[in-house]
Length: 362
Image 1 (tube, rainbow, N blue to C red):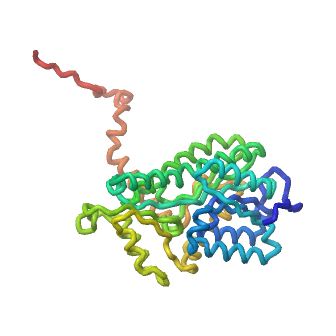
Image 2 (spheres, helix red, strand yellow):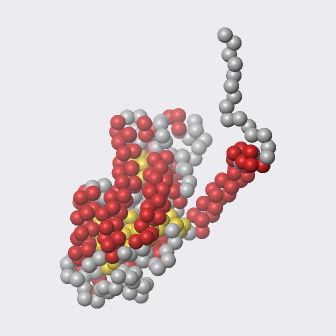
Image 3 (cartoon, one colour):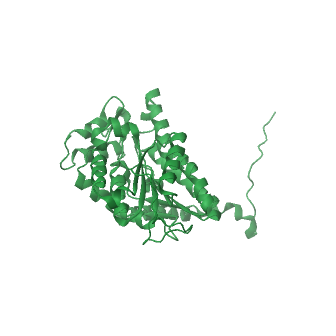
């Protein structure tokens, strides 16, 4: 792609309005979400630096096929090809993050919106992920990608945003940032961790006019559009022994029922006695429908003058989170006396001693 700066790019330090070009940096452009968003942004007239994981691009032909088709399509459109820059990026490596950000700035003069959208999913109960050094390594990989990866690219971009006194970080997670899910303990933990990090970060960067938004689509958007790794199952957690609706069984059944899948037994791989990894073989039309709502939400929020701190995509996701919050509220009411125990003295009642001294006969 061309390195030439476009003379039409606005130099005003304020956020461009939605009818002016915005400059985006996407951390994962090879996912269905990344491809669809790139198309949408380029058609809108925006500029995009698209991060591509080299090992995924080179060694997983099926995974990268749609992105290669997209690149060929962009190459035929003079109005688009000068507004797209593809960079090699493994967000787990700080040096690559710094290099990719520098290349983006060199190409387009600035970055307005950083979208952290790379994710991986590790399937397995807590015990299943504790069986061996290999399964323990899955836990490390999960956090390297879903937590430390976004931390790396955010740290590489912040000095640029702070210097020009504006910028917008958009973090794509899932409603698993609110909800624990049996069989996805480490995935949920990584989501909760990065959301806590970003919630805190938002206060630190607000004085520099740098905004941060967390976007939470349904869990399936991330789970079914990125790599899924699975630990060997333990018999104790098999369906006949454990009534909990484990994610392994749900995902396995879902993958086997995907209409048009070229691999009808994909779900069986999640029950392998070896550590396995796969990319869900969703048909192209299905993936476009799956990510469409999230793509439009991100495009609307990115670079907005007053973006939401948190946005849940879709009615189903909102309902699920509301139900969770309702449960928490009810539990607070049930245990209000325990929660208010520290206020007893303020109400003029006899305080309950924190400790009791027990005499032990000699």
